[in-house]
Image (cartoon, rainbow, N blue to C red):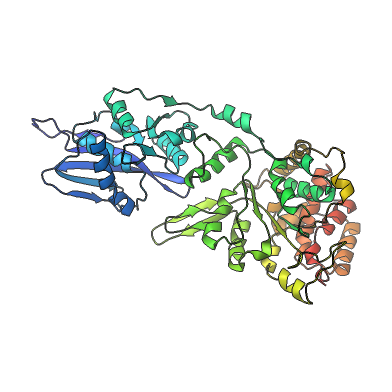
Length: 529
């Protein structure tokens, strides 16, 4: 083993441990770093804790003292020095309570220390000795296995989450009494075992909603199928009650299933954020995040005094839905521009810099104007002149440049709503999406990290989205007649490449280009009158 758990003082008549080492872990980004907690008991009466602890760790002395008394253990009335190494890394949070308490009890001869160096021990203590859940159990377990630890002892609520890591013994404890009894051999903790692959394949694609529940809106379903097939970002424009939110919420159900690697990566992010329930082991369906329009910059992209993943990282490998896009603060929308391109976000602080992955599909919705009825087939818009354009200008050109499909949503009429005709199920649409994605994976096989048409660079668009002379003429006429902006050119080619993939066509045809041109509503100079 890499470390020794204790050092015996020579000729000690009490056989008391002067120095004991226990092990915890700190999470930075979605990676963990092992922390060695050294507890030294010597002559004196004071308590010192060193190694860059924050206030929550400094306050742990009072919690630990109360816990030991309430559980009929003894708090040493001597000088206790706790060192958290490496000392140049900031340690934060109350999850070290159990690590420190275990070290103090071992150093005061209340716990047998022989096995301490084989386990990572983490947990927040309640004053009655109970253990509260911690954040980041999965990355901690992965790092523990990597460093050769035998096991991981943590609160019962986090046990399933950590147990998906194979070749690591995970024990969920409900109180400090369980942990003391485990090391002293008086309590036999039950090892938590999760069959990762079985858990994954049993729950995959287990969505609550389905496209078969949507009446009408076939053109919108088609647009979302194209978006899912190519990983394209989408904006839905339409009046209130047209079904924008309902359609957006069903988008994850037609995306390709998560791979096991994607599932583990997504679970790590949700583990660090403390978003996993006690019954969850893996995130097996693609995330769908829908933040309110009052969200702050930090809450969206991540950060804070103790950096935490934001909504764009929680949507990693899934969908980020921004309802009523113009109502979001402009600064909030602008900070998304770089993560949309780089598919990760870097949060820098004076002492550290952390990276969070943020590869997500953006789907946004908006009313066409403040009253909501501009271009409505039946109701009249009551907005004054110029207000529509001002409303749309809340969305900046650079952000709009990163959205490939602009889809106009019209209300569903009564005939379609009351129809008994069965709509196509999400599973059937998903099969077509998977086939299109397989074509793209084969196409980008030599490009690391690239798996969809939406990720193509300008150079790749020129190489892989070639069109014939008739197609060039159609695109030229469309740009001139519809007043399309220059930025629409690459987007149209990317989307037409995806449409061709869905059709199983090697070349981009005229019909593929024509459909892609149809999805550039907001680029038309006369759209807002």
